[in-house]
Image 1 (cartoon, protein in one colour):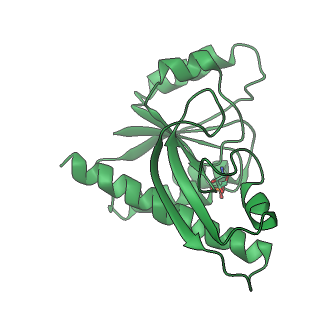
Image 2: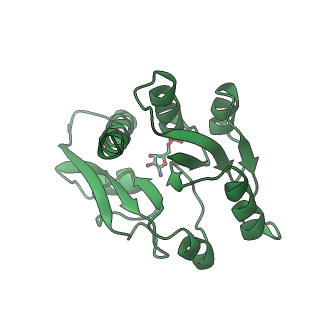
Length: 185
Ligand code: GRF
């Protein structure tokens, strides 16, 4: 399976996927394209792993057409949004229906949108969570594919809790990809 990973930031989740591929833990899944809306540390990680990269703001003219062309050129089968901070157009989503997965740092449907961890902490939740879901035009609302929830350690700062959420995100994505790998064997 040939994946395009979309990123906007640090790329810790991209790095996790790259590591699984490099260590041959994943044999049937590989990243063939990394797409970003801006130059960012995730792109440096992609380049270090010698991955093809494509950087363009969705606000630029001809974005959708050029993106579709880039995905086609790399014969991409599916798209993983790992920290991509943009909303993709309805037309684009339609043409990739059921083939785009998004990672979100909350137990959806709770706390869709931005600053999900902070909002869950402010609401004094006993549990935090992470979710993988199919992408539909409504933000963070598509069918849920896999989730993990865990008790909130009240002694931890928001910063440490965020790190903990990121660790669970890596676990979630790893388990998801390993399941896909098993299904296709
Ligand atoms: C993750 O928390 C992801 O769930 C959210 O953005 C963050 C990306 O982190 N959508 P990174 O760029 O993978 O380090």
